[in-house]
Image (cartoon, rainbow, N blue to C red; front, side, top):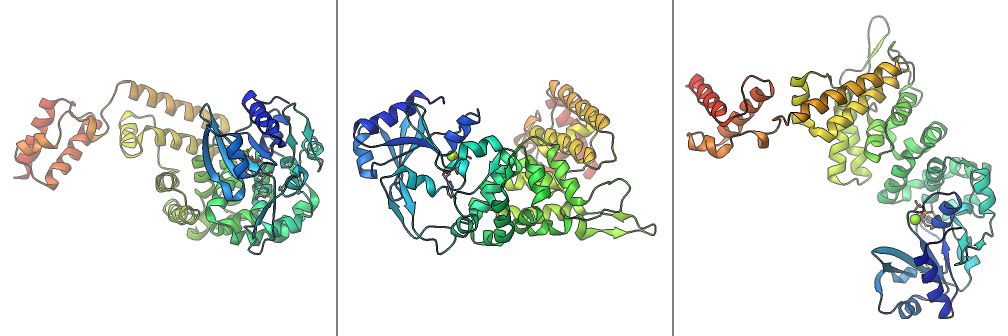
Length: 444
Ligand code: ATP
Ligand code: MG
């Protein structure tokens, strides 16, 4: 196993002071899988105060001393060092009533959630693996350490973490662990929204996301109840081969592994079952589902405590997920004005994924159209066009000087911007002022 020099050094600092210490958890798992660990966590027999002595004079952050964690920052990289501990009893299914520091690594490993997360490694790369985590990595299995039901009863978040790791690593879930998930998922109710959100976002961005959403719809819709009607929902429409749920999953698979895009696709058609009408031929129609989905998305994101900016962005993308798009310059400028470049490119991708996920469109055509849209946007942007008020060659002050007041100013600027985007007037000071005068003359 490859261990960064800094980590070896941290371990040997603790060892020279008479303590034992290991790298532990996710970093060991990821290294064994040949993935680059996001961070390196250490654990040690040293108590928090003892760690402070060992690392005296270094950049330290007292992250969670009461839980035994001290962060040592070296070269701007934080390393969490935590005293070996065991958790007391869990009466609320989310926090241990107490934690006790212990001086044995094996006890610390036994409190961890899954066998693949319960391995430690010393500075020579020797691995401690009391629960056969390495074998489970080989079998590509998520398996609880100990009795699954008991471990999920202690901390319900582990249920979602099991699905998260199965998705991200594209692993199967071992039978007993799976059974416990299917029985106990309603206890997720007690878990804080922020913890749910973090795991759920990782889950939907994982390589095995589709398999997990297909296999555990009851868990996902327990967390996002407005999606319940989507599961198994026959769209009764010739343009749609799949149920809303299957279409949703395929649409998610069709966009990059980005939290905002995946979340947009998860929610984009959530409103369909709620707005459906059926015509004389028995065909289902879904007028207004975009706005309905957007409203439900806003509620979902609020409940999961997304920050405002991200939530507003996702809601905007859900609402606009199937707006008309074309390569025509005039329309592209209007779209740029409304959504900005980043979101407009996102909408191109969303469109493409949404079409392919119907199961009735030619994927090659959809992808070719996506490329055409991006190329058309490239060439429009290459001309450095005017598509926001900021780009206009005059501003409010110029209109104020010409006697316009209050709301008139903003309205006039919008009119002028519209005409510039439509190519009816040039974006020059002279042309804009002339048009403003002409427009005012029309009014009086
Ligand atoms: P990631 O790469 O996503 O950070 P990770 O395995 O490091 O994955 P963390 O949430 O950072 O996951 O947790 C670090 C370690 O702490 C885990 O590997 C696991 O050993 C342990 N752990 C984390 N959360 C729990 C939990 N709810 N119950 C038991 N052990 C946990
Ligand atoms: Mg981690």
